[in-house]
Each structure stands twice: as structure tokens, then as C-alpha cells.
Image (cartoon, rainbow, N blue to C red; front, side):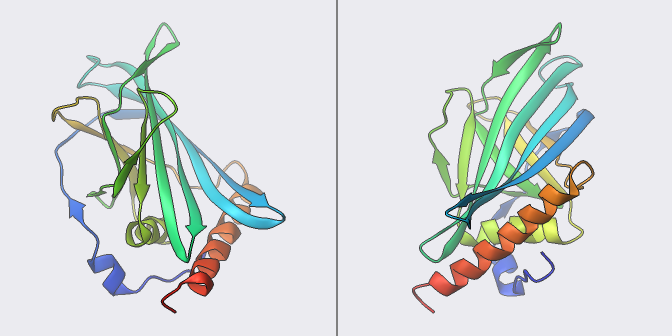
Length: 198
């Protein structure tokens, strides 16, 4: 991923929004990196995250969690990213899904909102799509020394956002992380080669 550079103009063009959020205690944060190929060529790169936390806003200090995914793909000369968030409360260790009405990525405390909301497999889940500039900014945040987090809201009409850090350290499987990094570089190079405005 060292070869993946982003010009300052792209970063300054990001639409960022600062939002109020809850201070919840993270109990566990795990990340698994992966890459998917088609015909031997990189197709999708991603990371799956699981974050368990003490929810002081909605659960009076009881345990809750989110599972989800950040995935990158190249389409018609552009790099895009997708964010998936599935929320659940834990009652006696049984996960009970809760609705995620809005989701977003947070980079160094600044919220990066998806450009489009997509249909999720389950009505309680959130899926959002990021266009080129924001997909690149999220990639750049992973490449640098930036704090990456996922944010979401459990209320349809406002409410307090919950912000939880994503652990991007490749502690469990260095090989999978390296494959993921190579996949991102391949997709970025393909997007550049396939750019119709090139």
C-alpha cells in the first residue's frame, strides 16, 4: 500500500461533517482482511470488523456490538467503496438485531458520509456506497497514521451517533493483510488505466 498516493486536492475536496456522538467503552475490536478474485484477477478487497462495546446511550451500560464490512472495487475506471453495518444488542449472550438508520466512516474524528444508501439484505442493516474521492480517502487513512472508525445512528430522526474505532492492525493474519494491500494497489492501478478521461 506504500505505492498508493493521494493528492492533497482530493483530500481537501472531501465533504466532512462533525457530529455529536456517544462515548462508549470498546470491549473487543477484531478485523479480518480478505481479497476476492475472478479469473485470477483482483475483483474486490475488503475487511470485516466486529466491535463489542458497552452502550451507555441506548442500553444503560449493557453490551452491544456491530459487525460489518468495508469493501473496495473498481468499476469503469473509478474506485468505489461500500460500508456495511449490522447492529445487535446482547441479552444473556443472545444477539438481538437493532436497526441502523445511518452509517458512515470516521477519519481522525471527521465523519465521511456515503454518497448513496443501498438496499441491505436485512431491513435492520445499513449499506452505503462511497464515490471515488471518499473511497480513496478511506484507503489513504488506512495507509497513513490516521484513526479510522465506523459511526452509526440507531434513531431514524436524529439522535446521538455512536462512533467506534476499527482496529486495522494485521495482528492475526499477516498474509491476508498483504493480499488485501496488493488487491487495493491492483484496483487503484486498474481504475487509473480504465479511466475514460485519461
